[in-house]
Structure formats: structure tokens, C-alpha cells
Image (tube, rainbow, N blue to C red; front, side, top):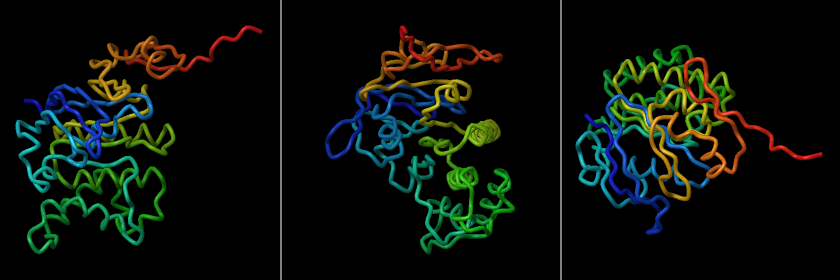
Length: 261
């Protein structure tokens, strides 16, 4: 089964396209990383899938045309986190994570014991149980990013859209977050679509890469197929080598351009 299908998708704002002609399929349980230089349209494409950017073409979520879904129904299909999510001052971790249950609340918008149980379960799965009562402002960067992931997970959607989930994290905390995300994906059978600036992380965790530049698809496929030194030079204006890890994943190594003395 296909979790996400895009056909000739064009997305943008106020009638101005930022991304054009995107077509791809993401299978259930897969991980797609959208990559590309700054301004390539990565976040815009993610927002179109989430339903918060205008689009033309076809976006299909688990065989349901996105254009036919209400905002509430789409929020039950897709969990989305922006690159810099709002973290309201004064909320505790539990209060913030509970916001993820909003699409499932009844007319009175009051959480049930089941909602609280789901939040408690997710907090413990992400090792946030001991921080449940802590104010958001007291969290470290890694803890805040885990709280953001927890809020998305409490929506209990089958498709997770995460815009640069490792922003502001050092290599250790970024790796730990991606490991947790991958473990949860496998345990729950959910599908993940992320944007990622770190190409080595993208190559190690994603099954598929979609490379955008100037709002257009320039390459799509496995990490080994997409990441080449030639493409990095052409689309990132970067001098880099593509090596291989011990597990066979591409590793991107910047190389200082040679200058004659």
C-alpha cells in the first residue's frame, strides 16, 4: 500500500509557485528525506502535504485524495511539525504534548482519560516521563525536540511530516533523535517524510531521497543513486567526496578546494 502519492504537484503561496512538477510514491512504513540547497522548496512541499500551503496536482494520503479531506480529517491522517514550532511559554511538557490530541477531541474539546493515557505512553516511549511536569522553557535543546516529536506522535497518525527535526542539535543529540524516530517508525508501522540538511544523516536513515533545486525535482531514488559528487557540486555548489560507511551508506565529506600556492 502507498502511504503518500504525489502527481505533478505544484505548491506555493498567494498563487506564486515555489515547487513544480513533483511526482513520487512513498510506501507504507517507508522514510523519504527531502533534500536540497536553501530555498529549494523543501519546506513548501512538506506544507502542501500537510495542507497549509496552496497546491495543484494530486496529493493522495493512504488512497484518500487530500483535496477531499476536511482539516480535521487531514489532521487525523498526517502529523506535521514545522522547522521552528511554537513552544508556548507557561506550558508544561504534558500540556504541550496533549495539544497533539486536538484533532481527536469531542465537541466540548475536553481531553478524556484515554487522551491522557496516550500522552503518558508517548512520553515514556521518548524517555520524557520524568520531565512531564517541567515547563517547556526549562528544557534543553534535545529535550525540546523530543517534546515536539511527542506532540506529533500523540496525534496517532500513520504519516509523520517533520521539517528539519534535528535543527539546533549537536551530532550526538541529532543521532539519538533520529534513532528514536526510526525505532518508533518500525514499531508502529508509520511512514516518515522529513526535510534534512545533513546529507549523511539523510543517507543513513531514509529509504528514499528527493533532491530539489529551484523548486524542481533533479533526482529521486535511493541515497546511493541520488548522492553523487557531481550533483553536490552542481546543486549545492559544494566540493565534496561521497564515501561509504562500514554499513554501506553514503557519507558526505566536504573537501577544501585546492588552491595553488
